Amino acid sequence: MSVGAPKIPVVVTEVVQVNDLIKRFRFQRRDGDAMPTFSGGAHVVVEMDDHGTRRMNPYSLMSAPSDTSGYEISVRRDDVGRGGSLYMHTHVQPGMEMVLSHPVNLFPLDNRAKKHLMIAGGIGITPFVAQMAQLQAMGGRFELHYSMRSPALGAYAQVLKAHYDDRVHLYYDEEKQFIDLKNLLKGQPLGTHLYVCGPKGMIAWVRATATEMGWPALSVHSEEFLAPPVGKAFEVQLAASGKTITVAPNQSLLEAMEANGVEAPYLCRGGACGQCETEVHRCDGHIDHNDHWLTDEQKASNTKIMPCVSRFAGAALVIDR
Image (cartoon, rainbow, N blue to C red; front, side, top):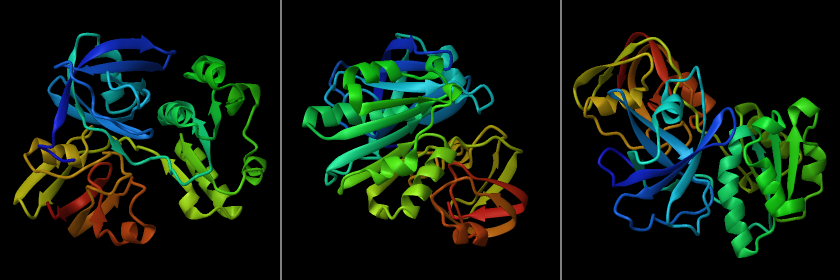
């Protein structure tokens, strides 16, 4: 996707307070037509006009892929973030018109798997809700292990447990319940694929443990969208377009380019897909690489940057846009 890519004009048809931190939103097309089809694990980018600031945040689709009448997402409120989640929580109401991107799937189920083992943490449950609905319809074999802070903050935990019964296992931090990951991975049948979505620490732990236990790299899947961090304003020169732009403290470099009419490709806007990777011509200072796409060597060389989540401090930064 990029600036100018086809979008879906929608209306908000439902807003549900799931718990103290999470709201669920349902969207339907303004023209009444069916939504584009998607597969479990897909996300959309939600556009927001936050008092003149254009925000574009990715959220996993959690509605059943078979339901083309509308899309559903869940948003966890972040009181110290850049404002996108707060906007969704405080301004978005039923009847409001918004714009979504077409679905993109960076976290698909691998149909070669004989079993799908899913590990979720917190709001990381959302892509699995759609994936389990898809697998249920296909007769696929799956198992979910869902870790959360407490029953009160466990979004959809009891609903999923009631629907899928012994295929769903719940763990509450406040009750000292934790996933016995090594034994869980040791007991899986040949041909199992492992999926993890949740906090950064959980993803790193699961991936490292799977590697340590000899799981093939191609059978381990993860997804994490990073929110662009806030920081001090900085200036960037764009070599191809001949522009010099200023990135505001609560704005990403990608957003600043778009605001200045410079088209840049993207799929996730969260440091995961690699689409916005850009060559660095000059770096007189320090790039704060916040993505998990570039290798450690690429980050150390300061020859590439991911404009969606990275920031800069120093005298001069020139990139190829």
